[in-house]
Image 1 (tube, rainbow, N blue to C red):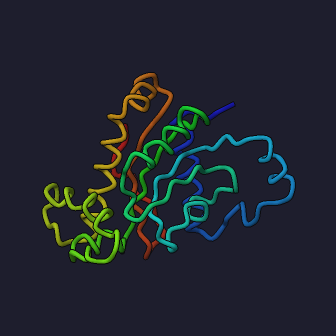
Image 2: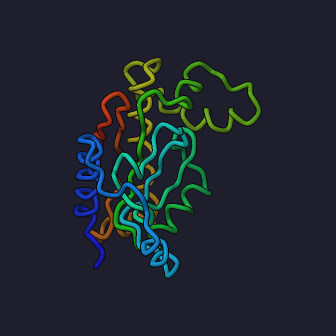
Image 3: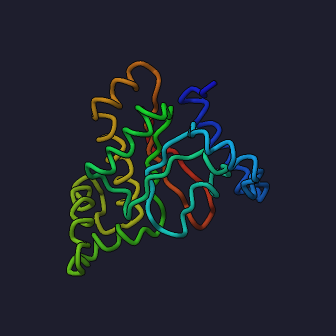
Length: 192
C-alpha cells in the first residue's frame, strides 16, 4: 500500500536522522531488490534536487534504490522537461510526495549572483534563478537565495494543474526543503 503524503515525508526525515547518526539502514542494494525493480517502481517521493555531486538524496535520506524518483538539474530550476518529469512521477507512478531540495553552497545560485553567465548555456540556467532576487532581503546572500529559490519553485509546482488537483484531493504534498551540507540536516521550508 502506498504511503500518504505525510507518511512519505516522515519516512524521508527519519532517513535523514539515520544519516546524521551514521546508522544507515540501506548501505547497498542487494540482488533481490534489483530483481524486484525490474517489475516496476513505486517511489516514495520525487525529489527535484540540484545536480551537485555533494548532495546525493538517496544517501542523505537513507533510501534504497527505487525509493526516490530523482529529477536533478543545477539550481533545482524548472523548465517544461523538469515539470514533465515530475508530472510523470505523480501521474504515472503515483508518487505521494514531491520535494524541492535546495542546498548550502549551491554553485548555480552563486553563478547567478556573480553573473557568471557568459559561459555557453549557463545563462539559460542563471536566468531562472535571478527572479528570486526580488524576494530576498539580501540578494547577494547565496544561502538565502537558495532557500527562497526552493520555496518559489515549490510554489510554482503547486500551481501546475495536475499537481494542484492531487494536492486538493489529499493525494500529494509538495514541500520545499534545504540541505545544510555542514551538518547534514534537512530543514522543511514550506509545505502544501
